[in-house]
Amino acid sequence: MLPSLLLPSTLLFSLAAVQVRAGDVPWLQPCDPAHQKLQEGTFQFQTDCDAMTFCASNSTCALRGCRNDDFPFGYLSNVTVPDKCPKGQFCPDEQDQCQNVLPVGSACQFNRDDECEGPPNFKDLADTTGFGLNVNGSVCLNNICMWANVTVGLPCIVQNTAYTAYGPDGEFVDIVSRGNCKVGLYCDSQQLVCVQTKAIGEQCDADKECSTYNCLANGTCGVTTDTPVQVKKWVYVVVAVCILGGMVGTLVALYFFHKKDRDAEREKRLQYWREQNAFRQNILQMQETARHSLMAYTPGGGSPRGSTLYSREGGMQSEDSGAPMLQQTTKSSGLRYYVSDDNSQLDDRSDEDLMMGQRSHQDVGRF
Ligand SMILES: *[C@@H]1O[C@H](CO)[C@@H](O)[C@H](O)[C@H]1NC(C)=O
Ligand SMILES: *[C@@H]1O[C@H](CO)[C@@H](O)[C@H](O)[C@H]1NC(C)=O
Ligand SMILES: *[C@@H]1O[C@H](CO)[C@@H](O)[C@H](O)[C@H]1NC(C)=O
Ligand SMILES: *[C@@H]1O[C@H](CO)[C@@H](O)[C@H](O)[C@H]1NC(C)=O
Ligand SMILES: *[C@@H]1O[C@H](CO)[C@@H](O)[C@H](O)[C@H]1NC(C)=O
Image (cartoon, rainbow, N blue to C red; front, side, top):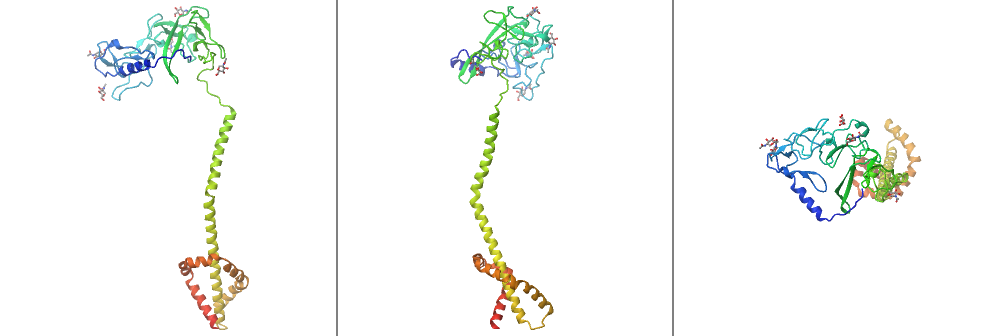
């Protein structure tokens, strides 16, 4: 697209005013058929009536009889959307009713190539590029139906239209030039003959001169505007590295963030384990003491069940593991802390053992 001329911004306001004024008269209300025209700059059809109606010849807004859009805008739910026109017919800009396609040479509405009847060799002439050069081989130029059948070097008809376009730098005029040359040719505006379109990289002055319909700002033909952007391989690599780096970085940051908490938690658990172990050793030790005192207290052939039980267990524990346990108990500072801190648990769990221990100590002392 070649921005040729910047328009003063006052034009923008005048255009906006026109847009606001058009198209708000509802169904059955009066309208002026003379107000139906193409808007300046955008060449949009303009009428007094709203989006569901057209201005009929009796100067009232009547419901539309056909539509051009697949998804028409502005219809209320209580209004039936009219059908599109069948093949061989067209829906005019007013959208009042379908009409038969017009033969070559008849008057047609601005840029409505689809209103014109196709040529016999429409299959050869039809535009399949998607650039909108013609419809089914026919083209509406200067409001006259023609066929896009002119070959290289022969005189052609051209229609130049200046549209108001809106870009990042404000408004500019975009001139679109259409002709009746065959697809692959363009109508040169000066010589008015059909010329072969140019390949990518060649010099150009307008989009129509390029086979890709895209004349770049530096005056050379570029690739078609719908060409997908190809990203270089290193971009994929950089993006992948950034994603992975972000993930790993988050994990590492969280690791260090929670390290202090984790260490404190581990220390607490270790302390608890030490306390529990020391506590257990202490209880075992007390049991041991109780057993010894009981054995000493029991006369020679006391209860046979008791004696065997005590002798068997006592022999295993008292000599071998009793001594190191005692050492552990004395070493652990956690036990004393634990006992003094939480006496209730000790009392709940080993009240009996404690009593036994106390009793045995007393007994020992007495003996
Ligand atoms: C005006 O014309 C339309 C369409 O031709 C018609 O539906 C409508 O009834 C007419 N209105 C009046 C008031 O004659
Ligand atoms: C649709 O409903 C609106 C009110 O919501 C009413 O004014 C209008 O006349 C209705 N149109 C038709 C065609 O019934
Ligand atoms: C193209 O034009 C020919 C000749 O008028 C007609 O027979 C054919 O149906 C048209 N095709 C389309 C898709 O309109
Ligand atoms: C080319 O189209 C025009 C109408 O635009 C027609 O009059 C003329 O006969 C056509 N020429 C050929 C060779 O088909
Ligand atoms: C014009 O621009 C395109 C893309 O920006 C570039 O590929 C091409 O080489 C340029 N041509 C000239 C003649 O500067």
